[in-house]
Amino acid sequence: MLEELAQAEAAVAGCVGASAWALPEHDLVAALDATHRLEQRLAMVKLALVRELEGRGIATAQGASSTAVWLRDRLRLGVGAARRLVELAATLDAAPAGVRDALAGGAVDVEQVRVIADTVSAVHTAAGAEAAEKAVGVLVEWAGQFEPTLLRKLGTRILDHVAPEIADAAAEAAMEAEARRAYRDRHVTLSELRDGRLRLSGILDGEAAGLLRAAIDPMTAPSGPDDPRSPGQRRHDAFADLCRLALRTGELPEHGGEPAQVVVTTSFETLARRLGAGTLDTGPQLTPETVRRLACDAAILPAVLGGSGQTLDVGRQRRLITGPLRRALVLRDRGCAFPGCDRPPRWCDAHHIRHWADGGDTSLANAVLLCGHHHRHVRRGEWTVRLGGDGHPEFVPPAWLDSDRLPRRNQYHRRT
Image (cartoon, rainbow, N blue to C red; front, side, top):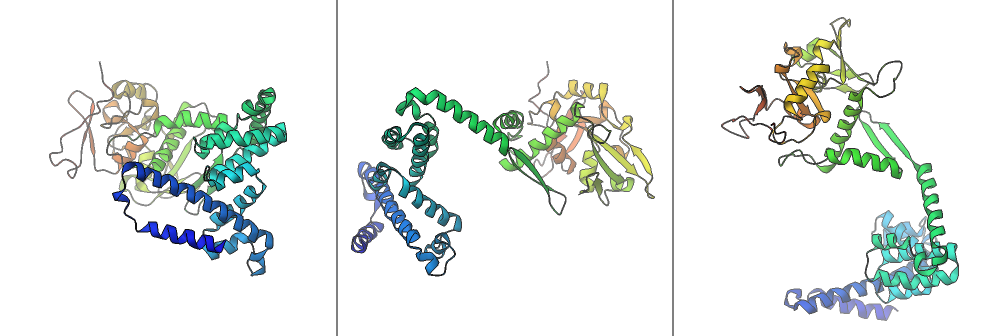
């Protein structure tokens, strides 16, 4: 074997310096196909060697804790890749001969082998050895047309082809088993980090996943051509907007005898002078700028303390844009008023143009609807918000964006 591998290595080395640009189109495609077949045949050889190493215990005999660890050091692989190599070698060793032959012949790749082996094992359990043997031929044929993910999806209905008499019953049983597994494994974990942020992780069952995607996907589109947020940041902001929307409905169950709400505790000096920080009732601290932005939101209950800690104000109605005033604001702005944004009213905060901590009143003339992203954007202070001569909001861009600072308006929410 060593002599043949040395010859193969020399032949491949001779191709490394070849000029691919000189090949005509047909030969270029044929060379790619040949390279892929060779790669799969070498994978077959490699997996057989790994399986033999594992079977002989060579890794542990040389002082390694496992074959995967030995492969990591010997081949300079990541430990995850080394483990997958050992697992695939075992899978291939137990696979039907037809699967091994397909890989050796370059007809399938190693990921397709994993899918075929898993599917054939499931068929053997459900319908017996004869059906499993038929499944090998069907799956190898499909592997010539479909990549591993689609191959696995097609494999869920393999019994329609090799054992149609039990296919429907087996599919129903598999679906019920999958539903039980999904119900058992469902969870959401909130891990508080040292700085007060949360790490969100979990697994949603199919129904919950559908609900979340239906609710969050429309909110994750870029807010405009100049939206600098990454897809992950847009999903984060959409999730926060979804929580704001839920709080705004007033239909959440009470918590501790009170309606569900966010309470921000701060001093008047923090709001007026933008000094110090605010604190959420759950513990994390917020920057003064964030506190001022949250205080604009009708879904936020501000608790303002004096210098000695006494409560000066806890969400007085005159400072909150609610009820008829918010309805009038919705009728006027029709959604987020920032230029280029198409977010509807229910996803928007009611923003004081002149902050109430700076003496601004709560009135239609001092309010504008902004989505969560543009509320944060405007609070940074580079854009100026004002009402035009017709009583509708307009936004003056910063000088670095437009040296003439010409006012801009939202054109998405057209008015009749």
